[in-house]
Image (cartoon, rainbow, N blue to C red; front, side, top):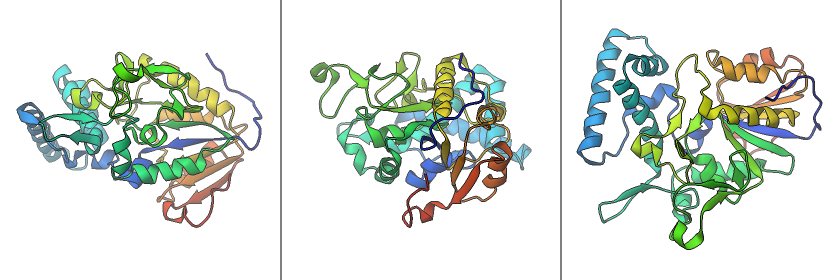
Amino acid sequence: MINIGDWNPPEKKYCVFFGAGFSKWASGLPTAPGLFDFKIRIWGVREQRKLNQIKHIKTIWDVTNPNGTSEEFIKQLIESSPEENKLITWYVARRLTDPFIWYTDYGRRSVLSIDDKRIISFKGVTKAKSFIDSIAGPDLTGILTTNYDLLIEYSLGTDNFNYGTRFQELHGKGRYPFTTYRTGPVQAKGNITLIKLHGSISLTDKGYCTDGRGGITGKARFIPPTQNKQILDFIAPEWENAKIILKKSASIVFFGFAFNQYDQNILDLFQETESWIKKIVLINTNTRVVPFAQKIWPNAEILLIHPDDLQKCPLPL
């Protein structure tokens, strides 16, 4: 186990933390309050039945819980029965996967793989890639995220990131149009470490995949957006790797992270870094994140930048 206590990393070192607001800014993916817009391109009778079922349950729940939140709705379904747990998990993953599904003229579909050349034409990937390229300097210690989607992976490609261990083999197809049978197994072999603290639509019981197939099959492994999340064993290594990255960092750049007060595990992780973090950069449209950050890092320099201002000046790292 990694214990992070008093520490003084080199002052130029920094890490980046992406929250759901980053994916919304880059590609319009919904944050938790907007998850149930049901914007899914239905594929077949089975998916239509699932979507109708979740719509029906949500309509009834909204009547009896007029002030309820999406997180509360998700939590109730997870705890109600194995069937509804499976249904809501499928829906969340399917909604975040939908913009990155490729449909053919031959009645087939697939989630685009991380190294698929066609992905650059998809909404938001170019925008996300431009920002990530701008912060991927030699002093970057790693990228942390609570997001399940693959925007970061699409932006980097497997040559430029790893999930905690370089040359980790990923399951699934390789670069389009070549298959793994022609190019060998795909490895995440880049220098930038990407840690997904709440799981991913690319993570299944077999490990990380080259695409978000779990978003279609319903077999993606992630912690749904609910209050009082519990850290499950399947992502325990990610949390240990996150501690290593934070220990190497003197500054943290947050993009679109809300500092939700019910995400206690995340807040506790940050609290452990209070003694050595010197600077916090908050890229956010909401000024309310500032006092939350000040509470965790009372002695750090805290800067707030609106996403619309990113083109005007470089990040003050």
